[in-house]
Image 1 (cartoon, rainbow, N blue to C red):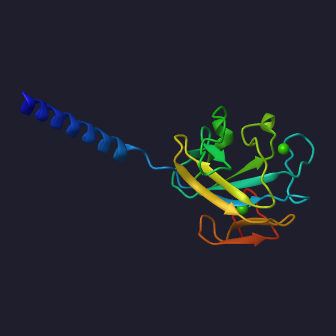
Image 2: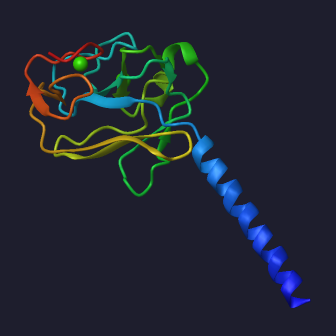
Length: 178
Ligand SMILES: [Ca+2]
Ligand SMILES: [Ca+2]
């Protein structure tokens, strides 16, 4: 009796492990998106004109280094590493939230969520902080902890999607860093 129970237990355990293994390996990879450039101290650099007047808001540039278009609708931006499900980008307008391969998308960190899908509910601190982009299921896509930011100077990757960062006196919001 106990032996047959052990056998069934073993079979059940094997099936559970196999299912977990299949689930793990069939899960799609997170898209190859990068936080590519940001401005957390926008005094007069690059206005958000969504409201019909210039608003000098903070912004984050996302770069798609992958080979497929990626819709960030449904993904999350968070200022807390331990809470990836921060602000969820609405998935109501994919034409606005899709980034083409090799393309860039500007997201305003302005607290003006009534201004559309590309406006976060929080601003960036010019004193520096953590910022992360997380996949729909909470997996990490890209994160950055930046330091004190100077007025009208952006902080970006020296090459799009690259590992080195530098300050830019001539920011390139929505375009390749140079
Ligand atoms: Ca705004
Ligand atoms: Ca740029």
